[in-house]
Structures are given as structure tokens and as C-alpha cells.
Length: 265
Ligand SMILES: [Zn+2]
Ligand SMILES: [Zn+2]
Image (cartoon, rainbow, N blue to C red):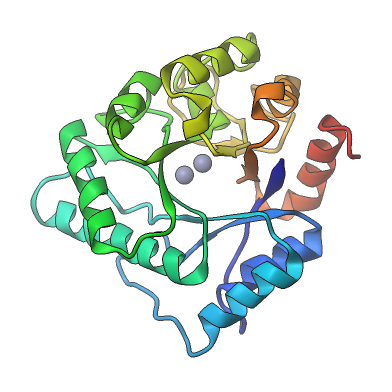
């Protein structure tokens, strides 16, 4: 099992800063944005930055890393927005390949699922091989694609993409993680196949069951509560990577809760 947080890349060390933060916390995995998640602007690699990142991966012995794509990406869109989305995702896939990052996580977007499928494959075709693309389940609302596991299964069918399972989003989309976490994992196994779910976003939820509200809470303090412990201790998920996207100022608290749940506290 690998675990860690979504870490910042601000500061002199650039991308390696996210790994410095993981090391400082004593975690074994990390997620980062390769550029500002709310802008189309890309971010250039500085000289030596990729090497520093790769060195840090080795020195800190970090098991798993992920890049989270921009929030602006909408692979279900039409026209220019689709093009920009494909290029933005391809840029993240390229960075991941260069940095030695394992996964690139993207929210499918809204609109036409067939466009999402096409967009994901197109982005991969523009980038060098290496990272595995993971489509994340979303909290829903509007014409959002990827609220149900069946829909995600359709998006990855016949590809080598996988799924990133976000517990907050699943709960907000109506999956009863508070009442029956084991049954939700059963469904994940049946519909997606756990070999296709290498990464779990471990977040509690401010919004209620089926609320479609994407608002993360500290572990154990949201609407899912202590039932999240059953997710992290599920035998079937023992080889997975858990990334917490909880309020940043509570990293130490969330880490302590996580470690207690898995019996390492
Ligand atoms: Zn996400
Ligand atoms: Zn997430």
C-alpha cells in the first residue's frame, strides 16, 4: 500500500517540491498539478527540473506518483474546447513521461461520452508512452460524464486506461459508502475490475449521499465518517495507492487518522 497527499509544486525546486513535501510528511506517494489547474497556460520545465524530480523519486524511495490534469479539461466538449482539452491532457501525459510519474488523472468532462473516449485516446497518441491514464469518477450534476461506474467502464473498455476512484465523489454520486462500504467495493470490482483501479482518492464528503456536491472533508469528519476506515482496510485494496485531497492545512491530522486506520499509527 502506498499513501500520500496532493502536494504543491510552488517554490524553487518546482516539481520536486511535491516530493520534498511527501518526504517531509513521511508518505510513500504523491500527487501534483503539472501546471495551474485553472488556467490553459502550460508550464515549461526549467533546466534540470526533470532530473531533480527523478533524483528525488529515487532518493526518497517514493512508490507511486500521479499528475492531476487541469480542471478546465473537458473531453466531452465539441470544437475548440475539445481541442484545447486534448492538448492540455497530452501536455500532462508528456510531463509525466519525462518525470517518471506513474499516473495521469483526469475528470472526463461533460457532454458526449463518445467524445470523451476519443479525446482520451487522442491525447495519448500525442504523448510519449509511459504513464497510465486514469479517468476519475465525479460527483455528478448537469451532463457530467463519469458519475456512474458503468459509464466509466464504457469509457475504458478496450483501452489500457484505468479508473481513479474518489470516495467523496462516489458518495456524492449516490454510492452508499457510509452504510455499506464493502458493497460499493464489490461493485467497483464487478463493474470496473480492481486491476483497473490502481489509485484511490481518499476523501470524506461535506455533501450528503447523492447530493452531487464535490466538497472534500477531513477523514472521519464528513458524511462518510468512520466507514472510510473500512475502505482503507479492505483486503482487496491492500496494493492500491491512496491519495488524500483533504484540506491542506490538516495534512498531519489526516495522515495520523489514516495511519491509525491501517494499524500503523
Ligand atoms: Zn480529481
Ligand atoms: Zn479526486
